[in-house]
Length: 279
Image 1 (spheres, rainbow, N blue to C red):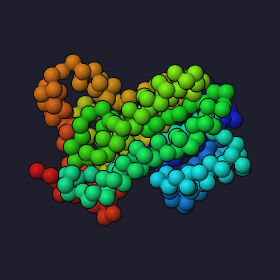
Image 2: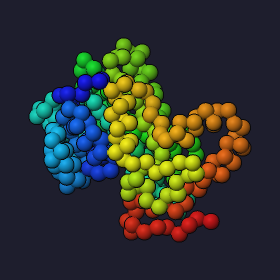
Image 3: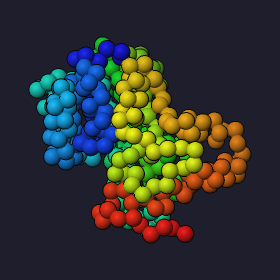
């Protein structure tokens, strides 16, 4: 979808961070952006930011764990503006810490938002994408969906699920003859948003900028790319894991600092303070 002029892009979790940067990037490319986020004030802020930059945006508060609310937003969007040409499932949360130190409800919440949320939103809007002459579905996963990530077990496994869901829905659409609907999964490493606060960036890598990732997503849509891996260390991860013996791969991840990168994470926790380092 090289020409994004007058295309309608629906984004979840667009109230801040990567979501807001993608809203700005797609609006600058000529698209009308539909901003959704659980927090109504953040929806308004992103809509205003897009309009201030000369783009077009509308917004709806949306909790992607609420199926009724998803349906309401869809009905309002279709009635007030029309169907989306692109859907970007971006909303996500993280709860870090040793598995047993994290309350079970927080593990469940991670799955509800990160995995069940994209499934529910896609289920609601996929018929609209299929009905368009050309459409695109983008799921924001994570590099943690490619490897083990201690101290973020349910976050990582939820992103494994997003990757599997994306690949499966892509193949299903192909077999059903809906090849005009492109599907992309995006697997970035740590991004400079509040969610990554306190992490230790692995060796030979760097903290990604949200605007940088937004540009990569925009480029992937224009080129109909199926997978986006970034930075370079993430790009070689699937190959490395496939060719190295498991023990060698684990030692490599230990040496690079990948397996311990979440030990000091504090992200969007309630106190906003670092957790004590896990020994």
